[in-house]
Amino acid sequence: MRKQNSIVEFQDFQDLLISDISPDIPTIIISSGTCGQASGAGSLIRVVKRELIAQQQTQNIRLRITGCHGFCEMEPSLLIMPRGTFYPKVKLKKVPMIISAIANNETISELLWSDPKNGGSIEKQVDIPFFKYQSRTILSRNEKTDPIRIFSYVRHGGYKQFVRLLEKGDHDYILEEVKKSGIRGRGGAGFPAGVKWEMLAAKKNTNGKFLVCNADEGDPGAYMDRSVLEGNPHSIIEAMLIGALATGATQGVFYVRQEYPLAIKHLLIALRQARELGVLGENILDTDFSFDLDLVKGAGAFVCGEETALIKSIEGKMGEPRQRPPYPIEMGINGSPTVINNVETWANIPIIFELGAENFAKVGTKGNSGTKIFSLVGKIRNTGLVEVPMGMTIEEIIHAIGGGAVGSKSIKAVQTGGPSGGCIPTSLFNLPIDYDSLSQAGSIMGSGGMIVMDENSCMIDVAKYFMNFLKDESCGKCYTCRKGTQRMYEILDDFSNGLGTPEKLELLIELAVVVRDTTMCGLGQTASNPVLSTIRYFPDEYNAHIESKMCPGGVCKELITYSINDNCNGCQVCVRACPEEAITGKKKEMHLIDLDKCIKCGSCVSVCQFDAVETA
Image 1: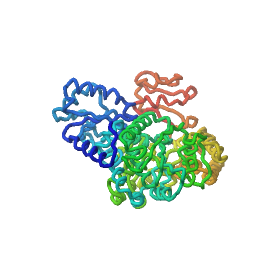
Image 2: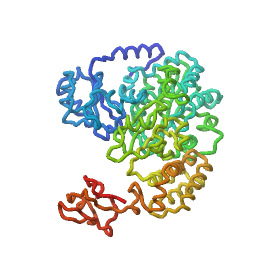
Image 3: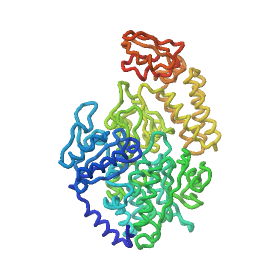
Image 4: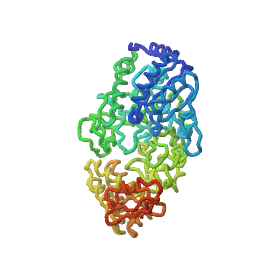
């Protein structure tokens, strides 16, 4: 790789790469993020390469290895461009016929995505409901770029906006455009990014100023930042270069949790390539602008998603929050002014300058511009990453994109904002997804986790699960957080075991309010959300656990009684599955459960194909 020594030289180099794009040559695109690799993308890549050679198609068909495309449920997949054909869950033995079909400009209909509700196959990716109702301004770029080849990024316009702004040399223009775009931080709090940048730009510091990309992302079920960093690391590097131009920052840091090995690997390669090309480091493209980036691996502490705890961790100290003010913008890394944004916030920056701030602001709603990426998981048909305009309703995300519930049970609620978020019932599914609406509903945007629950979910068990996570992740600095989260978990556990009382419910509410109002950092201040939201929206479930000593969701073992109904046809599958030999009955005759032997493990429910096992 030859270093580009000037702005003009880089622009000529990019024009040359762009002219090399041949849109008519078919390209096989294989999604190979963490989800793809876990589903067999590595083997698929090897077989595709081997088959391209065997069929002598290496000059006629191109291959591109990319990060995650979002539809994790359908991995490993093949996307054939420019036709847009999408083959989900590809079997290795089908690869030869797929490559033959590509060579002949044909499609294999039986391998296409099939609509489980309406039947029929859909060929083009953009017509599949999961993709059709999204606005994929960030995630769609994963499909265009090989994350470990900088030329791939540059060929598709990468670093163009940074070089244009470097040549323009107007720092105030950059700040005004970011402010005009209306983008708010995607990490949870939703603070306007342009305002934060402007505050940093106004700081005078002889020891330099820092920019930080927070890729700690500790929410269970959330993996948006990981996928963007795995699939398009150069877009974040370019964004931070633009941020440095605007604010006068001299150094940047990527803070990535150790559990993201593929993201770390791709980021290290991208940083090395950016330096070799000459767009990162000292006197970039023969100008007086210098900026470099380091990578710090976090140990995976949830509390280090909080700004001041993250800074402590970067400095090599224990990751625990400190009192604010002073805020990081005044005293951050090593006492220097520091701005922290998460991966998704940074990923939007080049897009703002590519589209123009006014056009960017047209997407979404007033005060909530742009798109937001959510990880859609749980009791839902289509799981994966979805990118939608701010203001889209929960109903549209769950049913139009997510495909609704998987089985016969209807959806009961959705948890937004991770463990510090709240459970929103179906009666509020017309709520628009934005920072203010979610806050009013007793939840938060968070980094974008969205966990769907159906009628088989117990809301007390859900609150207990998140409280167990939060008590373990509390740094312990605040007494009310350290002991409050532990005590809330213990009370919820009492409810699960049939020991709930009206007095304990009152104590739980009082304790949740105290924790919310007296703790120091964002973890403690939002830790009560799962408890307060489930009590607010699902009081009947709490009453059932207290008064009737029963669990409507059939989850709390101590409150469940198993029985077999008339649907039983005597297949004896449950008899073989029961570890305690508690089920008896002759073949083709109705079976019985001995409640004295039953340990309530649920094996009979999981194996029965005829809904013959009931819980009460």
